[in-house]
Length: 321
Image 1 (tube, rainbow, N blue to C red):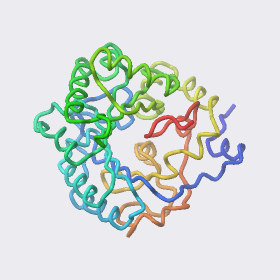
Image 2: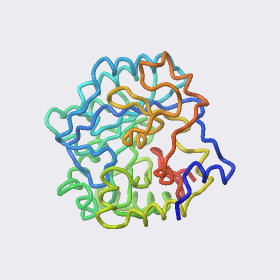
Image 3: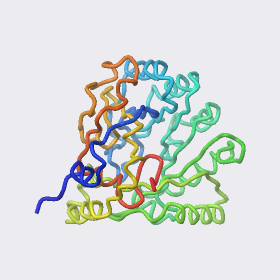
Image 4: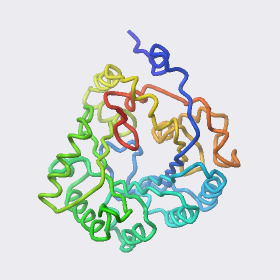
């Protein structure tokens, strides 16, 4: 029997159609190059990827941000965004406009050649760091992200702490991101955050602000892993069976728009990776003078959207309920 679509599920709960509110976050994927090639990566980033945003598109992003004063946050992701030659220009441009900047950092990139001053740059620009750390144990992190990644991640967190990150009153935010190793929903965010805080403090004297739990999306690299293991249908069934209507008002696609390295617009980073066009008529940063026309537009959905609405929900800001 065919499984009910996400749009049909929303309709059955009286929540259709899914539409965005005013855009408050501009999330920009600057490219696919990364020093890591993690098993769960929905971007399929890695050291050999060369896709990257050009200078003209980066400039257009800053122009749209300037013309859209209601957009409070520029959220930079990749790949490892710090490896992109336009990264610092985007950070400095957004900060000069008075906007918050988020750097979605894998931590190990801080030790790559040419990145010696990146941590200091982030602190000087008062960039909020959202750092990937899928577990607080060496075995689990290295199994998911590669041998030696846990040790370098711990050293990077210590470095950021020395610069003032997560120090009360510093204004330098440092959040961590957890995602399950396999095809399972994340545990309750508050409980896991307490465990992270205890383990990282007692074992490594590391402090952080918040922990975000993210659900693995059944797309790209993780989808192929599920297929190899014969668990693709099982995992999607888990997500569908745990659909939680209370998560829908907080879905990130309602207040965020995603920009690809080539300037194309998408309703979220996952839609971007699947090349599902934006629900609104605009197709790229060159089709708009500001981000106002995107407010009230339809959001394009597909089966992976069950990942954001399962259980406690999942977004770039962690659990939704």
